[in-house]
Amino acid sequence: MVILPAIDMKDGQCVRLVQGDMNQATVFSANPVEMAQRWVSEGAEILHLVDLNGAFAKKPVNLEVVRQILTTVDVPVELGGGIRDMATLESVFALGVHYAIIGTAAVSNPELVRDACREWPGRIRVGIDARGGMVAVNGWAEVTDVLATELASRFADYGVDAIIYTDIARDGLLKGVNVAECARMASGISIPVIASGGLATLDDIRQLKLHEADGISGVIAGKAIYTGAIDLAEAIALASR
Image 1 (spheres, one colour):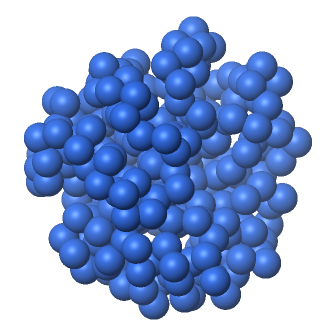
Image 2 (cartoon, helix red, strand yellow):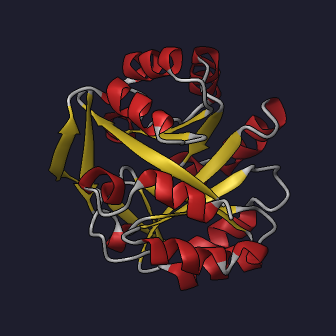
C-alpha cells in the first residue's frame, strides 16, 4: 500500500481545509514547492496535488506552482481540481503530471472519463468525494443524489487506473479514515481504491492494510503529516510491509 502526501494549493500556498470549506483554510506553507521537496526527502514515492482554486473556477488555476514542483521532484505526481475536458488533460500531461484526477466531470460527463482512458491509458484516476455516501461536486459545495458506490461501478470497464475516495465528513478533522466504506467500495469494483479523508494515526494505516486484498491500494496523508500527528517516513515503512 502506498502513502500519498497531499499538497493542496490555494492562492499559490499550501493549505489544508476542514471538510472542504475554503473559508476554513490553514496555511501550512507559503511555498508548496518546498513542501513537495520535503515529502520526497522523507520517502514519498508519489505526490497528490489538488488545485483548490481550480475546483471552484472549473479550470486549473495553480499550474505554475505545479510546473515548479514537477521540475524539482523526481517522483510521479497526480493532480486534481478543475480538470473537466480533454484540452485541460492535454495541458496537464504536457506539464509532466503523471496521473490526472477527474472529479466533478466524472459525474456530469462520464464520456470524458471513457475518452480520456482511451487517450491516456493507465493515467486517469477518478476522484469520488462523498458526504453521507452521496457524491459531492464543484469543490464539494454541492451534494448530488448519486451514490458513491454506484458512481464507482459505472467506470468498471473504462480503464480507470484508480478511484480516490474521500469521505468529506472526516476530511481535515483527524478523526480516522472511514475504513468500512472504503473497503465496501473496493470490494465491489475491480478498480483499486485510494482512501482519503481523516487519516489520523498509524492504526488507520494498519486497518486499511487489512483490506489490501479487497483492493485498497493507498491512502492520502494530509493534515496528519502537516501537524506531526503522523511521521511520514514511519507511515511509509508501515504501509510498505
